[in-house]
Image 1 (cartoon, rainbow, N blue to C red):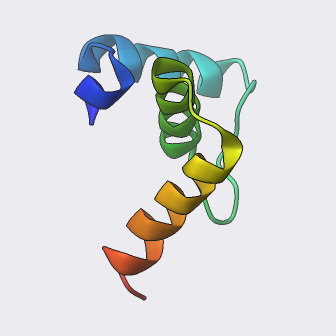
Image 2: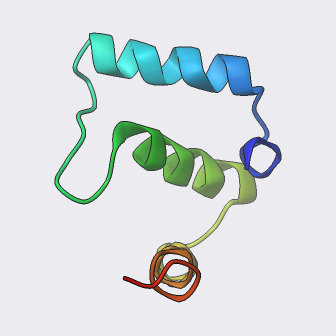
Image 3: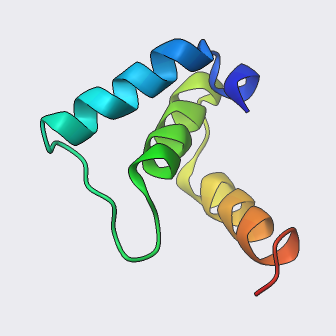
Length: 67
């Protein structure tokens, strides 16, 4: 996962802690801060378009981990 975001795991965890401590990002009902940040960094790292991200999120959420 960290390779796809092109980020060191230690730095990612400290970045998540920063966003939580400053309340710039909060966990929501369906997605936590870690996942929000991971999606954002994945988009930035790979210059993806919104539809590609949407399809990838749906794939991982419903096909790989069915409810």
